[in-house]
Image (cartoon, rainbow, N blue to C red; front, side):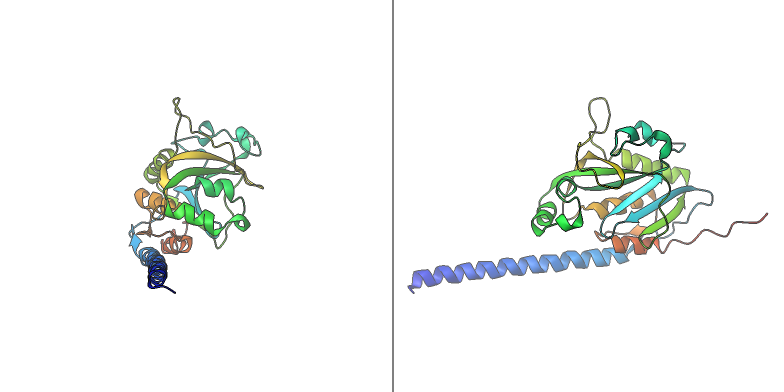
Length: 247
């Protein structure tokens, strides 16, 4: 082996090892930041509002959605998202709650089930800023109690703030209507997908969107975390409502 070839191989090996080291250190730093940020509480003094408006945070084990009533004093979501245009088409009087989740457009398009998730798709979504999308799902009834569901009562003012945050998460056409992706419907639920204006990347993921929405609404949550379990753990710290009075 000539010195020139040896030098090139040595240089290639050095660059490769350094690249691997940077990736490993970066991954550890990201996980560490999510763990630490997830344990730091934001809006620690939040208390529920007796007789307030229902708010649910629902996880599928990785991704979280915010679930609120279809109809309130602030808005009738059916005027924004006609359930008869969803898949499957559903009568307007058969929906009670509506769920909003934010995520990466490519993940929604290419990963209909978790079995379809690949390293390449995940890396592309996280490492490069990409187009985001909103996932809207209608529920015929409130989410059933589950280890992956958190329920709380919020004030009308907090609900108004949350509604505005959600409205601002949609890309709209010239007439002010949310722009549909016309794709990606999931089996077994009543849903649709829409474009969202903000880019998706490593520091702004689906659970970051949920966490930030809760923060801006004044609800107890994590300082920062991309992990669903840390977000749910913070919600576990919300004081329960006092027992209803018999009088």
